[in-house]
Length: 247
Image (cartoon, rainbow, N blue to C red; front, side, top):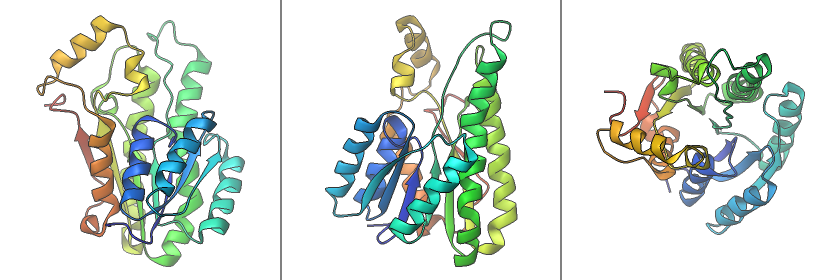
């Protein structure tokens, strides 16, 4: 029960990595607010799993790219849960194309959700965390943000930007008891990777020294540690969960 009595907000929490983190947190005693963009039924399932562990859990529809919407939803969460101790920025989208085929809208939307969305949510919690002199922010980046990836100029740029945001907030708020770290997953078995063609999936697995893709639970285990008291003196770090892909 590493997070007993804490309240966590997980964006993009209705499936994949976000759902695994929400479940892992609730299993360890945290109350959980699950933010989702469109998968309401899936979000309700995550909430039901969390409640089965005896914690308070609720789902909120929110486009994290919309500043006013984020502000309103986080105010609602604060009123319902009392406080926010942990923020996990997991919401993300892809619109993969080579640069010459990528439209301005493709680029703008991915940056708006993946990067500006994290700015919006961090802005919504940092004041109250600073007052409490306690808080954990965990940003889900990607190895694509560290090494680039053909066809992902927008996604890689957004995830690289998330690392810059992470390090800056770590410096700004370390003296106020807030830590900010990033997790950079490699290829993880989610709906996003399942949409890849079979030959591409096979090639990806062969490129990983571990010779397999990771599972959402692999990322959730690290998120749990970073959210716990055991990581109180760790901030500004980017930790890869990639089976050795980046080596």
